[in-house]
Image (cartoon, rainbow, N blue to C red; front, side):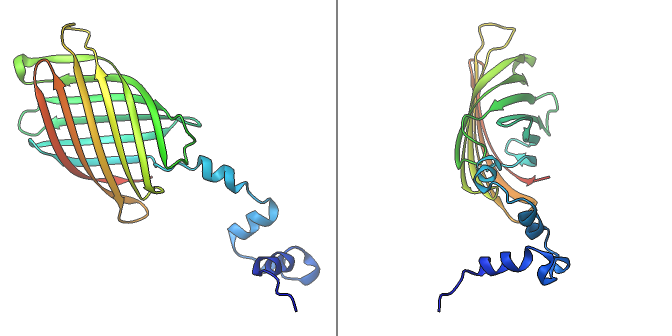
Length: 209
């Protein structure tokens, strides 16, 4: 005697009023499937492998940092911003905004995004203030969707004044989920310019709204 798949029995049982069980279905997911089966492939491709996340943490050199990463603006378009300040010398700080456009669907485990934005650095050396348009690339490798990932970015900054100064910023972040809403993250950053070279390591907490 042939054995039918379990889902076939479930579907046939829950389809109509003829068996009198429609009112007993309490699962929102099952109701959604019965009313209109979703396009699973499309959902997988467009559900972001890298979630929107609010970051807060501390870094070496007695600095703290807050950031909002990859707030989704469109299909593959996101907005990110961060602020970093020294606890010992409030004059030393860095902040900026970037818009990223991901080349692959948001559900891809590996993705690359050109980024464009504005960044400002206020340094201790001679009270320098470097501000201007920033551009670069952002890479993400998702080890487990929205739960564990590696991200890296490389950014060029061409200050408006002084024009002879060039700045590059590199960042590498690893994050791992400890609950559905929170992740632990470790971050390494490197700043190189004609004025100074600085690296820092930090740890922090990420909240996924």
